Image (cartoon, rainbow, N blue to C red; front, side):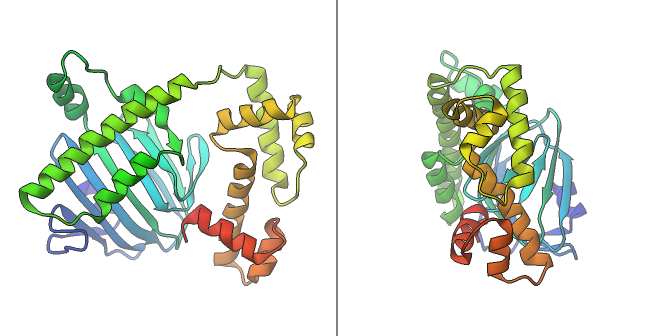
Length: 302
């Protein structure tokens, strides 16, 4: 990642020990942002990463992820992934599959990217693990695909927090990080088994088309109170099927989707206008600024 880091204004600070004595800390020294990025790893096997920086202006990100599997938790984030479109929100745990297609995202200005992640390379998950467990080996690639993005993975959240706060050094730290990498991969594989056991049947093309009509309607009317029955009529479904199918397609509930759209607009209004909290709350569909503030913290981590 050294080339990409330098391109975006990050410079290495070998003596910076804010995340411990191991690894390498980078500082955002360019005019575009401020903060730090820490990495630790074993070459060609795995890498641990901590992000804690922000951009001064909205930042369009497009790059080719290296061939690797990674799992990341966001403590604070604001932006949208663009292929396919999806809002990034605080509290989520997301899996990335590198080496297949460019990653595109729009990161919103002035809201910190605070995250902790573990990345494993093919030499680890296709070579090392296969040699270690020749009789039981199953490639974790499919398991990482199943995880995608979730807010319901407490075991992984606990593991990543332990990595973030650890401050050991020497051989003890090396063994600690190595064990956490193996544990993270095992948790993903176990989580895949749970997901497959409760997997819903595939949505039909007609259902997907009707749900896209609902999504388009929500995008235009997110600031209003929308009866579920109205959305069911747009989708030509019963309310129970609509709720189940919507979550299967979007990975979130209808209520969560509406909140995501409202928070995207709220960020713009907070940063770029002089409206009061109460005015902004009313403009995006909330009757009180306290309710707006509560959901904003839940969405962004701030």
